[in-house]
Length: 518
Image 1: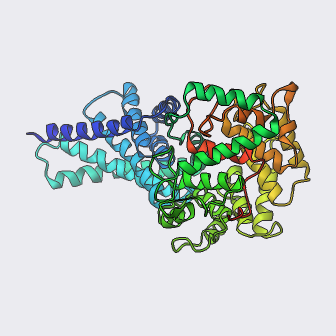
Image 2: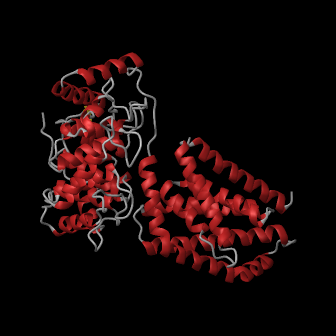
Image 3: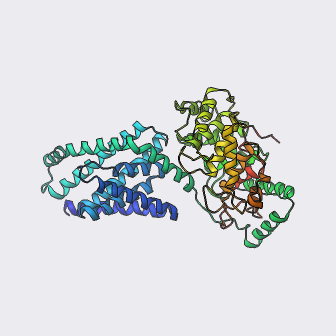
């Protein structure tokens, strides 16, 4: 078998494995659209900079996709970008090599997030992009040696590498420059999508059949507000308790493998409803036991740390000695000079809530500076965007910012009043809220309710144009099992949705004090 044929077989197997992995991940239509858009952007970036040999943003886009969205999407973006751009440059034996090389850049980005965390700074990302450029060059140099050297001697391989060195260096330097210029902005944008898409949807439990769901809907809509309000949390509390696994944690749906993500949100929802996570046990293990036992698996991103701190404090447990880690100290070290955490409103809001729950006073420098950063990011319309000032205001991010500002002692500030006003003005006719525009959903409605509560407003009285209140909208989503649907048009009932909505139905913002023990 010749070198060329053998290499093509290996490349074919690699590409088949990569695309098979991506297909087995069952990406949603929205994720598919995002991956296609990024692949097109990467391909166009290569074409636009064609006059500059080896200088192109393609590698950066692919690597950062893998860094934020994971290995499978990163590989798909890289491989498709190579194939698509060669419709312009010409297909040939180099195409599968480029597909594998750029797909590998996406995998490298995912590994970078796994081992270095998703909060790397501008310089670290630029260094990674430069390294990926050199690695891409090495793969393509090897392909030249395989396809065109003839006798495949090491001497000829050295000549190929030496002759390509200026181009490889230009590629690496260009990658670093592109990343320094737009890398963090692209990461923030992709993290926004990841936050919204990182949910595995599961079928609704059998107990929530059509007849039972209709019955629950009728009861919720027609019972007196106080009765429905009280009944919904009770059923939902019971649902979350039944969803607990024998290791003490919870997964995306009852019976699914436990994760820190779903256990943490469930702990917060139960604590808001007056149920201490320490008292919720299965097989002798509580939710706190699960969180502590799996602390080593917590990744470096701020979201995991802040959620875990909040969950532990809601249970009355310390967040300073968790699997040999001081999560509070780690969080404080992550604060930037401008007071933000990772430069984003949403991340900073959760960090302030975690610090307040851990006992940091509102007057402390960390909380004060973080609150000043959030307040300075308010949009002209009064709302907040995930990344910061200038992006479209959203209910989720405005609700989170309101909770953080209130926890930092700014409840009576003009910024809080305007943000609460923005929420009230953007209520949908069904009583619920959407992220920015469109159909109402339980998550955005829950965040809006919690933000209004933090601002001192009464969500039960928020009825734009005489519509149902946001609490009424959430109650309409409660099924007979206690699980809460994502929206009125959805039959899906993920555990995290029930946990988040439960907090709002309990009439609480995110709990900053321990729930009472039984």
